[in-house]
Length: 87
Image (cartoon, rainbow, N blue to C red; front, side, top):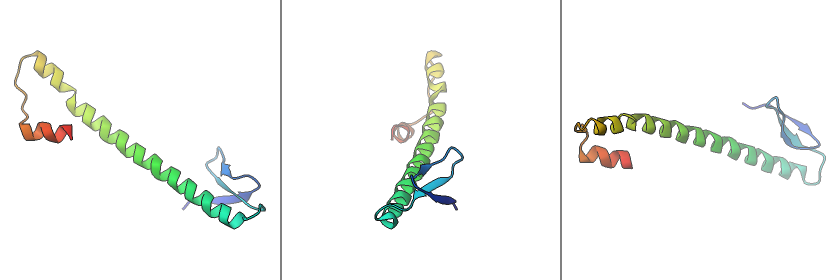
C-alpha cells in the first residue's frame, strides 16, 4: 500500500510520498488520472528491472564462450540450445 497526501501540486516528494492535487477544477478526475499515471510508471519500472536482470543473466551465461573458442575446444551446446539462447 502506498501512502499519499493532498496538495496544490501533484508529484512525488524526495521522501517517496505521492502528492495528489486537490482544489482544482475537476480535481476528482485529475486525481484518478494522476493515480493511473503513477501506477503505470511503477509498472514500467518493474518491467525494466526484470528485463535488466534477464539480460544480465544471459550475458553472464555467454561470457565463457569466447574463451572456449579461443582454446579451439568444442562448445557443449546443441542446435536447440543455440536457438533457445538466440530467442
